[in-house]
Each structure stands twice: as structure tokens, then as C-alpha cells.
Length: 263
Image (tube, rainbow, N blue to C red):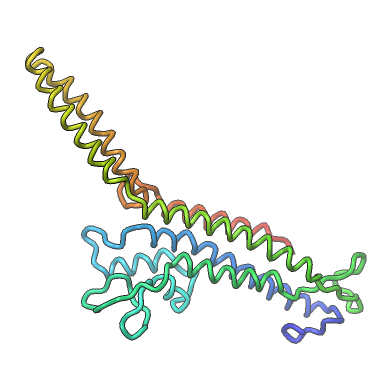
């Protein structure tokens, strides 16, 4: 039995209770799914920002999650570290002593999504045999077969594995800097080349060559600057990825999908 429902009969009240429980479980899954892009953003972005104190940073992170999670649910998502007593703590705290990083927020969300995937797949939501009336109290209930439940769990798990893979790729990009030899070689070669080229051009053409030299120097140095910007695409500058907009688009897509659910 589930929520006090007799599994052998079907009443209007039992249908409403089952449908409400199933919808609540689906909304819980959608809620955590919408939180995942926000958790990824918090993990990829650098924790410190110019002219921001830690209190403002904490409030902003909590504001971005919004009402999707209650304060108690949001704590393990927002707090990545444990203090010396094993309590949840922020990544950077003023005068907090030694902090041990024990969790990545995206992994906390993904772990919760896997738990909900299991609950959804093996949810005991029985159905009528074909041809029975929707609210026939004498209708014979037919439970979902174990093979169908296993198939549903596999489908959901495959989607979560895709999310795992995307998150892992972004983490590798974040933690893989440009090779030191590449950076030094590019900068050294550019500076030597531009210095000799500028001296030769001024000596041969005179000061009239300066405007063309400035434009050429700007173009070539821009190549080196672009390489440095591509090294960290998840930072906060204008040239970096707009992770906040990505999270908003994902949440709107999930909400749209929920609106189209039919019972």
C-alpha cells in the first residue's frame, strides 16, 4: 500500500492521492535539475570578486538558487568545506581557521538527482488494464512490471550520465592551464619580433610608419591576449561564458516541460 491506498481497487480519492504523490516527486526532480546549472556556475567561477565582501558573495549565491531549495537543502550545495569540528562552512571565511574541502556542489546535486531517479523509476503507481473506465471503483489494478521500471531507471540514468560527462568536461577545462612553454614561447617570440620590426620600420620609413606599426602591434598582441582569455572561459569578464544566462535558460526549459506534462 502507498499513502493508505488499497492496491486492488481504484477510487477517485486514491487516484488523486497517487497522482499528487507522483507529481510531487516529479517536481522535486525538476527542482534539483534546475539547481544543477547554478551549482556548476558557483563551482566554476572564482570565489573572490573585486569590491565584494564575503557576506555579499554568500547572499548572491543564495539568491541565485532562490526558492527552489529551502535553506536546509541549500546548505550542502552552497557550503563546500567543513571546519575543524566537521560542520558545514563556506569556502572562504574570515578568521575561520583551517577549512577542509569535502564536497563539490554539482556532485551534491547529482547525487540527489540519482536518488530521485530511483524513486521515480520504482514509484508504485499502478494503472488500469486497457478498456477500464478511469474512475471505475471495481477496475482491476495492474502494477508496472519490474522490467518497465528498470527500463525507466536506465533511461533516466543515461540522461544523468550525460550531465555527469558535461560537468566533467567543464571541470577539466577549468583545471587545465595553457602549457607554460607555449605561453613563454609565444610572448617571447612576439616581443622580440615586434621590437626588431618596429626599430627597422622606423629606421627605414621614419616616424610616418608609427600609425601602421601601432595597428599591427595591437593585432598581434591581441592574439596572445585571446589565448590567455581562452585559458579560463568561466571567469567573470565580458569575454567569458555567461553561465548565469545558461542557468536561466535551463530553468525556463524545465518549467516549460513541466507545463506540458499530462496526467
